[in-house]
Amino acid sequence: MDYKKLIVEDLQKVIGEELSAEVLYNSLEVPKMSTHGDYAFPTFSLAKVYRKAPNMIAEDLIEKLDKAHYENIVAVGGYINFFLNKGEVSQTVLTTILNEKEHYGDANIGQGRNIPVDMSSPNIAKPMSMGHLRSTVIGNSLAELSGKIGYQPVKINHLGDWGTQFGKLIVAFKKWGSEEAVREEPIAELLKLYVQFHDEAEEHPELEEEGRAWFKKLEDNDPEAVRLWEWFREESLKEFQAVYDMLDITFDSYAGEAFYNDKMDPIIKDLEDKNLLVSDQGADIVDLEKYDLNPALIRKSDGATLYITRDLAAANYRIENYDFVEALYVVGNEQSGHFKQLKAVLKEMGHDWSDNIKHIPFGLITSGGKKLSTRKGNVILLEEVLNEAIKTTKAGIEEKNPGLENKDEVAHQVGVGAVVFHDLKNDRMNTFDFNLDDIIQFEGETGPYVQYTRSRCESILAKAEWTPGNADAALSLNDEDSWEVIKCLDNFPKKIQEAYQKYEPSVMAKFLIDLAQKFNKYYSKHKILENDEQKEARLSLVYSVSVVIKEGLRLLGIKSPDKM
Ligand code: ARG
Image: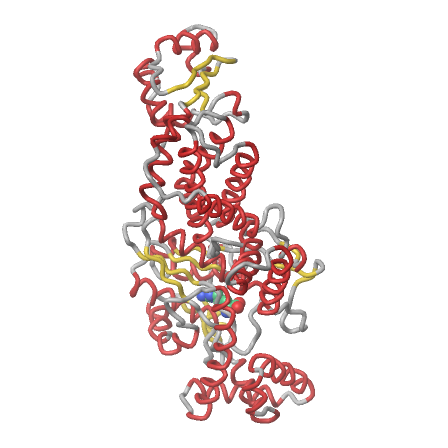
């Protein structure tokens, strides 16, 4: 509930027309210290009108204010400090959560309109990098958040499955490859062949020509080229799928770059008709000088299309098929130039919707301060990281809670949750250094800490054999510790919206850490199961915390086991 609105209504009754509701609303502050109340209204701007010292104005206004909804209202240093009625607010907040359960925080801001989310998008025949992991989990969370507030997300895996490198790969496979080796370890073997191609091509430059010729065959639907390409793609996808399964992430579309192979001609024609295509040493480019950008290379002198050409076709396909309100592209910051060019070319083509194309960049993951690169072989294999996290979690469970049921499932949910949470809790633009020990920490501001807090809630509720009733008992809550938890719970819907509007899952991750910390403080100071008149209220609170943590983690793509 928006208590600021309540305060604004009360203030308007005593201030009158002097300040609009909007001005009042925006001037309300949340004091840094809770001893200064829940909201504070600065009276300084009224000093000229009333010709009085601010604190006098504050005192006069308080005299006239309707105090029904407040525990206390005091004038301090020119501010009116409002203390909300803890019991009333607690009752309202907990009643809402008890009624709405996992739907608490749902909104209909999106009104069912589509949001394509371009995410993950690894390259065929190459290992999925930590960058692709970031894209996968950030994209997935943004999709969940958008769905929660009423949009219809469409998760698209824009696979890198087209381009001249596939011609080279075919040549390398035909010369040095074996079918068994590829079947055994597809990506490792294909990567090896690709690297070998580049090494050999240094001494035998004619290989490059062969590679180009085979890509041309592929573009022209030569059966052998197509068969090999499809097979490479299929084998690579199997490996990617193993990671997606571990993360329990699905896609609505796997339309990758190859999907647009037959959809680029109309775009190029359109560019020609609009006189945007300029010939430059045999190649076709779009000049973007007025955007202060490098020219966009659309077609090479040999007729080959490029990454951006396929993205132009993809953007057109998405507007036609999804009629999107906005289209997100969750792709590393190093591609920001590419997306600026993409938007600029679409703008030049007269597409106003290009403004609704949003590149959602994120920072690099480095290792020992160095960039991770496929070429040099210093990639960190995702599957290994996830497996390592699960293994460590399992060992911890064996040590601390050997009798736990479904140990493997719990270890999976907690281990994978640790990796995902570690990624999402940082502002997405932050670069961070990869360190496995850091990632599988269970204490401090981690995913397992949040999951553990919820399993604690569940075990209390099970012990009490409690089932949700109404939250009227919450009227009796009046201590500072429960109040901190209540205010946090009350903020959940706003945090969901903020996380989506800023495209920052970290807003949700940080919120969950804050909620868990506040709840654990409450738990350490209050005996939840003591038989007194507040017991029902405390249990409603515990239940509500569990509901909100579970839903908050779901929005991050993380599971929460009841027991751990
Ligand atoms: N495959 C590309 C890469 O790994 C990312 C593709 C991102 N999506 C897009 N529509 N360009 O760098």
